[in-house]
Each structure stands twice: as structure tokens, then as C-alpha cells.
Length: 165
Figure 1: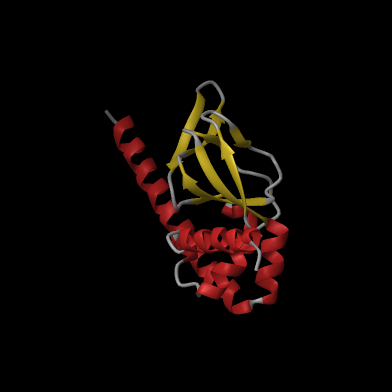
Figure 2 (figure 1 turned 30 degrees about the horizontal axis):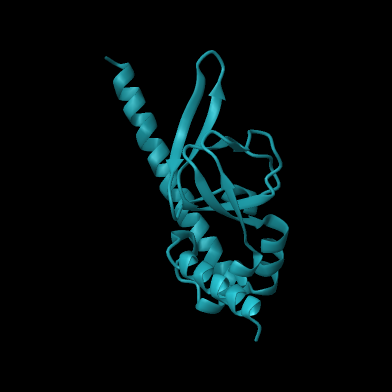
């Protein structure tokens, strides 16, 4: 094995190790994580960089390795409303895995960030070929979306309470 091949294997193993720390991939086997790592590419974004904007095609899933990403929407007459600030180990753009709809919010680098990017088509193909993997990923998506919905409900309840005073 050449030195370049060994270095590539080492980088792939490090990537698999990073994926073990991402709750989105909880419960997946080492082999499943290796397959997912094989689909991923890495991107780095400077603070303030727009990663995607509302209405863009939802063709990628993002995993934050380092830094933070702000998910927001522009509100007419009010400006930007931050919906979430996500950090290492968190996933965004996951709704693209579930439907063919355009992006429902903007994503910007809140601070310099390093992301793993998985193309929707490649991930769909992997899940089609590996039904057990698809089942585990689907349940992880359901848990994550449920958690985010509860957080949004709590935020609206606080806003409603605050507006009464």
C-alpha cells in the first residue's frame, strides 16, 4: 500500500470517528458509518458566509465539524430572525432528505466553520441499497425533528407569555 493510500485510509478512519459523535448517526454500525463517510466531502466557510438561502434547492445535508452555523429567516419589516445557532455534531439541511422542497430558511456561518457535506442523491442511493441503514437514519431524523419542534413550541410559548406584559 502506498503512503498516499495509507494517508487516505487514515483520513477516512478519522472521519468515521467524527461521525460516531454525531447524534444524527446514533445507533449506526461502524460499516454504515464507513459507507456514509465515503459519500462526504468537506467545506470550510468564513464567518458570515451564506451556505444556502431560503428557496435554494435542498440537495445537500450538512454536518458541523467545527464552528457554528446560524439558521434564520428574513421577516418583512423586522429583518433577520435567528431560528437556531448550531454547533459541532449538529446537522442541518436534513429536510432535504425527506422531500423535494426548496430550502425553508437561510444558513450562514455564524463563525468560521468546517462542514461535512453529503449530496442528497448519493445518500438516497445508499439508503435505497441498505434498508436497515435507511430505517435507523429515518428514526434519527424523526427524533431530531421532534426535538426541534418542541424547542420551537417552547420559544413560541415564551413569546406569547412575554407579549402579554
